[in-house]
Image (cartoon, rainbow, N blue to C red; front, side):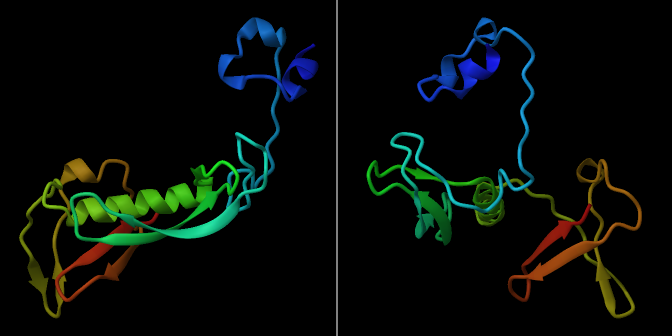
Length: 149
């Protein structure tokens, strides 16, 4: 019963109830199910085109180019899992540059030719000793630092 119910094309998954399934159901996803592959339109089921679009980043003068999937028939646009992750990173960077962003001011110290600052303890929960960081210079005074897991 469960397989018959779930596999019909007419099933409205937003309104599915436990009694519609009737038994435990197991799902299997391929390892790239949420990766950077093509999408089909949820409305008309046609294959969507990958296109680049320019977006304004709120509270900044910045713009970003991201890839989206657009349906030519319905004119709807979606992000797949990989593109959504990239979009989230762009939004975090934009937030760092906005005047409304939250930030800490820290003292810059030196040890010989090296400069250093300390992260507040509130930001370092879950960090481990000897982790690595990526430092991306944005300008002579602006940097984007990412802690590797």
